[in-house]
Image (tube, rainbow, N blue to C red; front, side, top):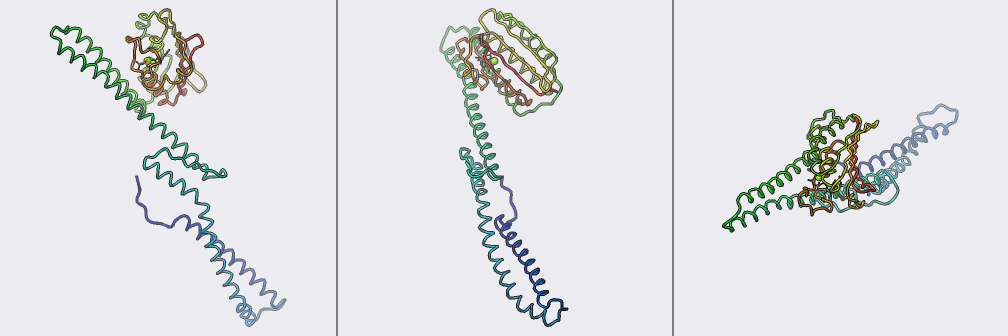
Length: 356
Ligand SMILES: Nc1ncnc2c1ncn2[C@@H]1O[C@H](COP(=O)(O)OP(=O)(O)OP(=O)(O)O)[C@@H](O)[C@H]1O
Ligand SMILES: [Mg+2]
């Protein structure tokens, strides 16, 4: 947005004028001082006569005028050149700002030279551009993935309907069942996307939340799922108070425990949910047994639509947004999410939120 401003003097002109002004002032002071010391030396020890004063002034004035004139010219020219030199980096920064405003975020100022205020400004500007560019790229990737994921259930629905229409002895009950599964999946996906954007916009009131209660809540809800997967759930830990949205923090905990159950060993898996209160942080750790994960894979899991390697198990194929939601919720609460593969296989997820 461009603001209409009154036209004004350029900074270069202002600097030039003040430089010349100061030079003139200093020159004038020197000249006055010179004049008085001269006038004393003219008739040592004698009270001035009107005549001698006039004489002195008469011979001194032209010299003073020449000196002042020279100082003015020198001040203006020198000031103009000096100000131009000092302000040159600013025009580079300005150019970069304009380019960024037009949407080309790839440009960097890359200011060299000594480490001064301009250099600092340029470096901060470069850092900002870098972040902005990464953020925009991520948003674009996200939008592309989200559209793709949303189209999939719709395309499956269409195929199911097309096939059913051509088939005279179709099994309507089976068709309805399959449509319902696909439909539920689409609803889950849309809800996950909504949740993601809500967490991102930080549209929630802050209340005191005890993570150990959220952990208890989540494990209780997911106990039947754990039993079905043959996974043992162990919840321990102290009260860990933080401030935020109870619903979102419960969602965060539920997503982590859900993951720990479904991405576990095929049998005899275990999940450990621990909470702890550190001096400055409330900590939630969810750890589970499972397949060994390479650090490289672990580093990408929290990205939206990343589903690890197990897409084959259709029954537990999720949307791939669970950890992305956890990460956004943690960040919206000024917290952090840490993922680490366990040496014996499985994952250890640590969420650290500011203590209330
Ligand atoms: N506790 C865990 N142990 C092992 N692997 C995990 C764990 N949590 C997540 N993963 C891996 O990270 C991937 C991404 O997890 P995420 O929760 O984002 O998506 P998802 O569980 O596949 O789908 P959903 O959106 O339904 O949660 C999973 O597909 C899985 O491969
Ligand atoms: Mg998940």
